[in-house]
Length: 119
Length: 112
Image 1: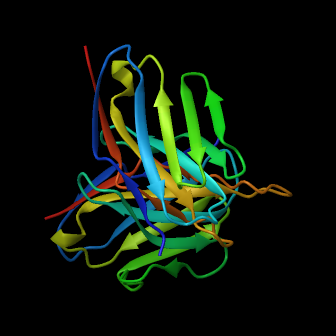
Image 2 (image 1 turned 90 degrees about the vertical axis):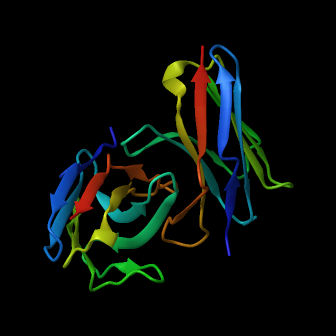
């Protein structure tokens, strides 16, 4: 159980185009989803926290107009990189926390990541 | 602010035990996690420990927590080549949003 998928797994696009990445929790409902960015040989940098039905909370330094996040349902969140540029090339990873009733431990389960290359 | 630190690299011989260390700064953290990342993949949750525990064992994995020193370790017994990966320590940030603060990751290399 607790499987999170991402689509696409990799994408190459031209500079100036927009790219949408989907994150789905396959066998559980996720109240909260997180979007991370990882540069080569570095740790994960949290970009934003997404709660179903409300606006995402962005970390300091992350442009919300550049990285649009939509969490329309308890199983789907999307990250759209608008007007992508080569410096946006990175590995984007999402995670999801199960919606637990009465539970107090909300583990984050991670997707396999999406590698974006902007030419 | 919160900070999580790990050594960056560990090399062990196949069959030996590996010990990956981590220090954190926020004493009010409730949960501490170990994740594994293989090349080009996402993060796999290996294990976690609640802050009122000192030790947790799960098959080949043993987690030790020293709250006084804010030190967390992951021991992998009988390390195999398939254990080669990057291991991330993470603490759960206090508050209601389940945010995780990650260390830089320890690259474990297992050689014959």
